Image (cartoon, rainbow, N blue to C red; front, side):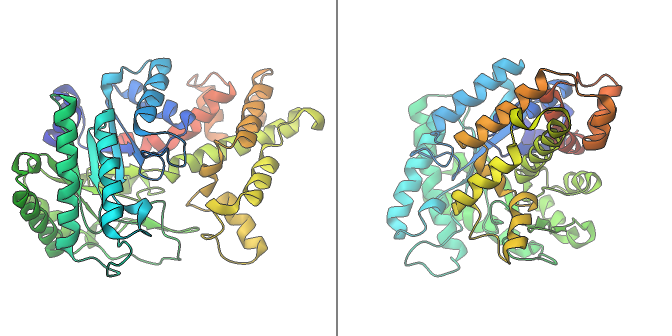
Length: 426
């Protein structure tokens, strides 16, 4: 893995310290600041990725284009004190996903523009995801079609890197068995682990597609294959990693020198499972909803503390504001959360897919969150009250690891999640 980390980070010292890398897939500034604080504490690089629906050439759901996201991340890093060169920026699920309703050729042209924008902005880890069918395609695309489209996008990335004139060339992630971003919408009991022969076939068909386009030099920078190691989550359950089910898949890496596996949907895995994944070659661990789930837990706990301490006329009423906005603007949750009114109400807050995360940037929700932090910044939160609502942060405060301000408590809660990933990767 150290060789892959070196190619990813350009930092041999960091490669010696890491046996894996976790990837923070979030655009929330408080989550990113917490991740940067963790990287500072560990003296390691930090991999931050934006997904194709968060950030694209039109703005995505965050309103940011790739260059905007780079500036956004760098400004947070400057504030936290993490050197910019310690940050690796990646693009996740880059391909025609957002335009699947269009004919394939039109969707691919938009995907080409997306790839070019990412590479031109300075993203160096590029996940080429062409696994989804577009209008007029068969429901399940053959591997050779997926590979040809991925190679086509790789050629665009290479041209954009040439135009940029950077010495550090992009590294690539490939794969046809790509989990659905954000977790499964249906209830799960188990998920099928990628078959070892399927992994080898995927690499072979992609290598042939690269060779046909004269991309042999770029192929040397394909560092990881997305596979399914048997981890996933739905709205209320987590499918835990079982190493014994992935033994044959792990053995494939011995035949793929210079490559590791990238594991998506690792959110909510137990710390020992994360460590086992890295040990077994799933050395890039993606986490997204898991960190914003922790953010929501922290904010709602602080809102409970606010209710205890402040008069009703000055409270932020954050939780009520979030619920109101989600009901007024149901587009980001309604088609995912099934059941009766009570079941949907619970899922809006507690689903592992954490579709609350799409609402933190809403002006009304953001104003309430800022008011909550401001309200509690103006008074000391009693330790014994903190013990009731944020017990782990209570002990962190007692040990002198936090200063007790609302933002330190929020970051402490998020770092409870990130810290497990950091430990698994060291």
